[in-house]
Length: 118
Image (cartoon, rainbow, N blue to C red; front, side):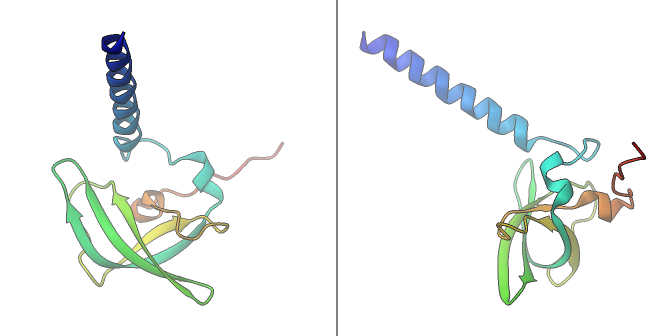
């Protein structure tokens, strides 16, 4: 009986790991999460850069109202990575300003999606 429970727990853990990897592995060619399309844009200052074997993360800071927010965002673009002191475009959730993502559309010059006439 305990062997079956152990196998089920391992299966759930592996399934969760696959979901996490799938959500993190989104590339530049994919559109951003539709939820972030309505988030506010801001140019954040890079504080530091963390490179892992598969991803690069930027510690950025930006001002929302009177608050200085520090946050990590995944940097999805290939090639040169911004250095500390440079500014990068991000989007943040106006309801929860600490939720932020890198705005690769603004950095690559891709215009935001605009709803056409109905």
